[in-house]
Image (tube, rainbow, N blue to C red):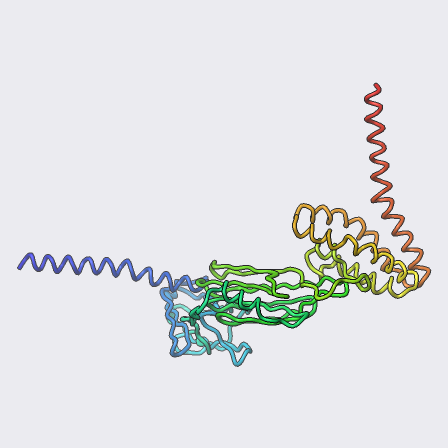
Length: 382
């Protein structure tokens, strides 16, 4: 009998120890879902109530204080259609009249004040995603991308392919379309305008974040039956950022061309330096006869080498930095042209800028080289 009792006691003790090990792990997993800070007390437990779309929080309130908690949209949110509305916050069953909140596309952070002995808080939303749906892949991502490559996409357009097993949100943009926010769950695809023509190099970019700790996110952009950019992440709340040039549907021509070298150097057609060049061309040079004549001759020469230089920059970061260093003095002198309004001003200031650049890029290095060679020659003679 004693042996039986001893055996039962041992089994019970082992079970108690196992439960003691497992329960903290469960609580830790729940605590990891939320980023929070508390003053005047301690958080004891989180509990998600899917039926009532609410988050229950048990606290040990030792004094007057506040709880600041970040609520990932992938877990709980409050919306009517696509518009955010306020969460309902209760303290021991009494609704809180107001609270501070900070909103981002990925989460919402709220500050809840509490008094001593307040031991139960609840945050009620409209949506809960504690168990995100999972898409069962009938074919691999590589096979899906290959099948998409075989599909015809209209000229001047590209397709953004999103592969994921969780929620995501972000935005995309190209030189042809404005900044567009997107969000979704699992796989999706979006067709957007992305066309480089008439000598103008157009760009696109997409930045999308995984809204959960677990899962994966892969992005592909395809155009003209080619993959022109791709990226992926499996990290907690990972983000994928991709950017590249749109493909041209026709051979570039000199007239109306874009700043290929500057765009490749500064990474975007919307960079301030590229905008400066475009504005001087459109607002000063192209509005006068002498400026238009200069641009016509310049374009014929520029487009014989600029695509090659731009490609070399994209292939070599060191070369790109060297080009950026070389462009800086020229961009400084071109600022003079912003004051030109009349034909005579464009002609006079334009010649001044050309003279300054010839001096900086040719005369000054030549004089420096001559001085160094003369000094070396005198040292040899002595």
